[in-house]
Image (cartoon, rainbow over all chains, first blue to last red; front, side, top):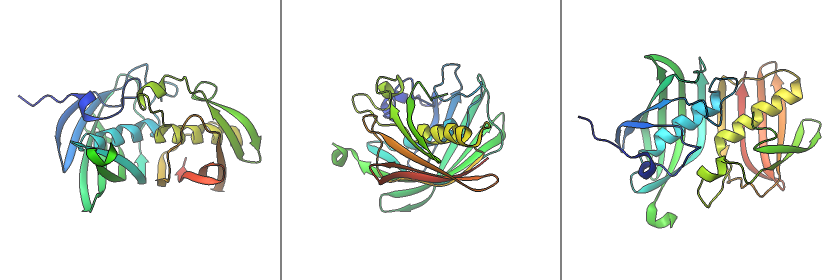
Length: 134
Length: 109
């Protein structure tokens, strides 16, 4: 049995701007999420999720790692998409911290649909502890 | 399509667009509650739509490089977006509020 994670207590975004629906695994070094693309997704274009939507999915996957902290995406160093997923498809995104310097994390994200990699991204994230944010 | 729902073009001059946001759009309910900020992903989507307007054909980004967020974009401000095509498939975008840069990136079709 895997632990259940509550989306609303893991990320600051709220519907209709939530781009993950299950957190499968998360720790300070990485996270894995799933997202079934809904017909009401606010970034759909002609039934497909464009790069912008895949970027938001990767960013929210990274945000789940910040237990007790707020995470800001400062930079998307690079992102590549080889196929745009369609409504109803399940995208699985894995984020891994590859470098850490003070409060700056460099995170690599890989998004798959049925074990096929469709997108990769490298994000630079700043973490701010909850007390400082408030 | 976010144009005419999330934002409206109020000025279009030689690859430089000025847009105004619809602050009552549902996206701002979730991003973030009582603290509306235009999502970075929406800036990317707006750039894709404006590139299509500029170049007269649908544009789908497949790669993106060096997207930097300098400061948050709130829906109460007019935003200026400049689009520049550096070669057949490469575009540069810069987003600014009153000449102060909020975000920039390079994308390929």
